[in-house]
Structures are given as C-alpha cells and as structure tokens.
Amino acid sequence: MAALSEWFKANTLSLNIDKTSYMLFCASDARCVPQHSFELFIESFKVKRVESCKFLGVYLDEKMTWKTHIEQITSKMSKTIVYFLELSIFYLNIYYVL
Image 1 (tube, rainbow, N blue to C red):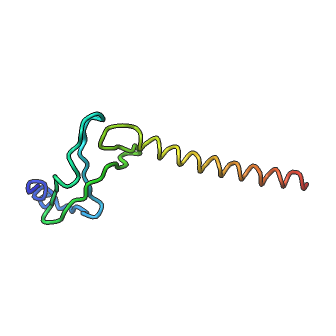
Image 2 (image 1 turned 180 degrees about the vertical axis):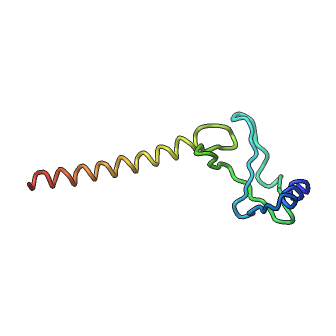
Image 3 (image 1 turned 60 degrees about the vertical axis):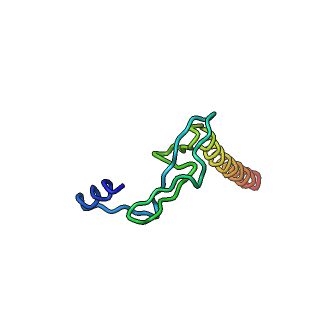
C-alpha cells in the first residue's frame, strides 16, 4: 500500500478514504475470508470492506453472483411500474371527467 500512496503523491492525486472500499472475491460455493481476519490500511486510515458495490452501473458482490444486481434492478423496475400505474389512473380519471 505504500507504493500506492507514493504513486498518488507523485501524480499529485488524492484518495478520498470515505469513498474508498475494498471487496474480496471468491467463488460462490467457496468460503470467503471471515469479516475480521483481513484489514486494509492506507496511511493509517482503515479502508472499509463491503460485500457488494456498484461499478459502471453493474452491482458486483463478493460471491460473484448476480443476486445483488437483480435485486437492485427489480426494485427500480417495481417503483417505475407503480409510477406509471398511478399516472395512468390519473389520466383515466381526467378522461372520464371530460
């Protein structure tokens, strides 16, 4: 991690630790490393470990399954469907009033 810190300094870049996280990938049928057995520090700041994250619009999880991505897309779709349903009911009410 020291080399990473040096690279950031050499290129006059900064790393936002609050927005930085890491994830350990493993096969879906294998046991992943336990939560507290691995910690990552950058210049004495602890980097948080996450089980899933959004990268380029795709939700990735540590077991390399599509479960998190499908749940997120399903949630967005159901909200949109409810919105269109309410919108259609509103316009049908206006149509019958006229």
